[in-house]
Structure formats: structure tokens, C-alpha cells
Image (cartoon, rainbow, N blue to C red; front, top):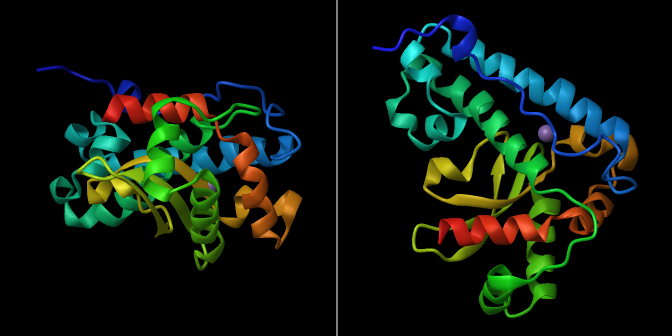
Length: 209
Ligand code: MN
């Protein structure tokens, strides 16, 4: 049996793979810094807090935890949904952002085939993100039968809990855009499409087919 010290079991903040200002002007440096260093760190801390009396769960990744919610004790299940989801959703979100990539490859073919055109896909995903009431996320997911689907969720609920694999995550909590866009969520969403890292999305898609 492995003997973990509390320190090594703790979930840690995943560093950004780019500079805080790398997504300017779509996402300003201050927003990225606060979003990553404060909000995401907060979810990491609260996930660790929720799991502190369950060492066997601390060995699992946030993705494993929220994919198997029936294995989480009821007393901490909602905390794991909120904070495990918060960690997993943000790790995906920050990892799929990059300026100036172009859609190509299998994901391009699949989007055009499923949604008839890229413009139609963009319109549908934007609508889902715009109409999510209150805090939550809009998603492009891969379903169990490997079809692309656009969906949305409340709070930090993850598609992984429904057996769906998230490929694109649009954070529509106000903390993700309010400093720069204030109440103009549609403008944030329109600009968000300029920083989707299509090379990364294509890789995720191919890996999960
Ligand atoms: Mn967020």
C-alpha cells in the first residue's frame, strides 16, 4: 500500500502554458491573471478541503471524480461537483485558448458535417453561451456515440458527469469577462471565437474518437 503524505495528495494549481497577456486584446491580462490565480486557485483549495478526510479520493484526478459521482460520499458530493468541476472545467478552458489558429483536420470535417457549416455551428454555440441564465458554461462535447453536440450547464457542472467529453468550454461566469466587457456577454462570446485553439481541439477530438 502506498503511503502518501498529505502534501503529495493535494491537488495543485496547473500553470498556464502561456503568458497572462497572450490572449490580448480578446482576454485582457488582468482578467486572465485573476481568473487563473484567484478563481481557479480557489476551486483547487476548496476541492482539497472537500477531500481532506477521504485519502482514497485524493488520489483521483478531478476528471475521474466528476465522471463517477456515485462513488463520492453524499456528504461531499455537491462540493466535489462544484470544486472538482471548477478545477476540471477551468483546466480545459485555459488549455484550449490561443490566438490566431485556424480550424482544420478531422474536427473541421465533423463540425461541417454535424452542423452543416462552420457559421451555423458558431451561431448555435454562441446562442447557447449567450442564453445560459446566470453562471455556467457552454460546451461542444463528444457524446457516448461519438457525435458532436452543443450544450450548456449551470454553475460548475461538467459534461463528464453525463458521460460526455468536453472539447470546447466557454466560461460565461461574469468573472471571465466582466472587467473588460461588463454586461456585454455577446461581445465577449463573439471575440472568444478568435482565441479558440483549433489545433488543440482537433487533437482532443482525435484522441477521444
Ligand atoms: Mn471561471
